[in-house]
Image 1 (cartoon, rainbow, N blue to C red):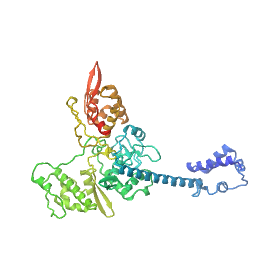
Image 2 (image 1 turned 60 degrees about the vertical axis):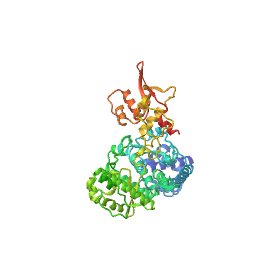
Image 3 (image 1 turned 180 degrees about the vertical axis):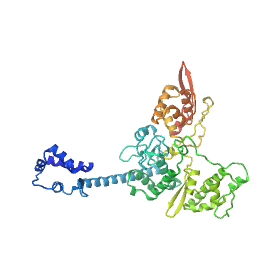
Image 4 (image 1 turned 90 degrees about the vertical axis):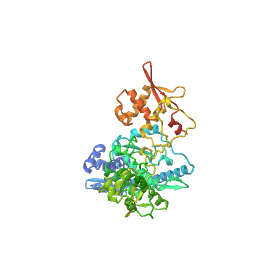
Length: 509
């Protein structure tokens, strides 16, 4: 038997399977390349007029099946066994990866290590490579700033808990993911994916398994509770068709935060009545306007959830009836807030975005309060703590070594990119100026990566200007927290910076 021809025949048959090629035309192609039909089968030690299936059974037992003019692998074929074996080996590697991630998070927690810093420069190749590809979670095509399905970078294990800025290997830690899936996964972790140990918060092993498996595993292997909650939140967000700017995709705007006015009025006094299970509920909020009523419900609901959780119980949505009685009734609250006909999950979703979520367990629904409600997407896994930066003129700034930093606030991703790019320039206390052209080159690269012209790029930072490009860049630097002045010398423009930058000091502390 011609073993070389037998190997070629096996490869040709396998290609026929993969391409779903018709038997007769494809076999004629093989004969043209290797001799006549009679010559081919004589070299393979066949004599007589046998069917193709008989010849294949003898040459490759339990490997190929001929039916309806097509060739396919049998369930016992070496190919199918190899596919199954590879799937089993991959599953074993995935399980090892999950266990390693859980162990790394535990070590990070036990050693009291600080959150990992995002390395935006390192992540830029991932951004360029992933834009325009499909979201690994929902399959939608991700495009720059394309609404709730716009491209984002997902740290599968949040850097707050030790996740790294890596996107290599068989199961990359960082992947491109659409905004909605990314935000939904974050809310699940905030709601049911954390545990408190010795007064500190740690992500659970169950949540780590869910976050990894949802991207790299089989659907049936994903944690059912978290998968169901993900589906509910995802569908709710899609059904509401929230406008892009309302999602605060780039962290430039702020959610409307309803506040209870400080004036000592009857309405304010009523709003300060604590919620307890023993008190008789009276409609104390009837006279409040819409904004005050929304603020009071939020505060009362958070207190009720905290009290229930402190007692070791989740907060049932049925208990909301008691809170709405203080507003007269649920229907009266809906009428005041112009939410008639809406379910409670829609009401909470629209009035308090990313602050409360509902979870369904059987026939019971529970409400979870999310912490850090003022954060936008880019900080939910980054956790990069950066103090607010003063926008005072350069000459009015006084550096004091004993100055206490203000509370940390979230910083939008575009600002982080600008800060990283400008901070990498060769500036020192002796040489604290940089030509405008060099600054423009850095911003030009960032602008082109986002696929925007200069006008759109400035608008993404909420900057409106009708002056020169230099003036716009100056406003942008100030918006990003740099203390600098634009000066001119012999018709050459340059920026004079006050160093060091405040956020640099904090990040390297």
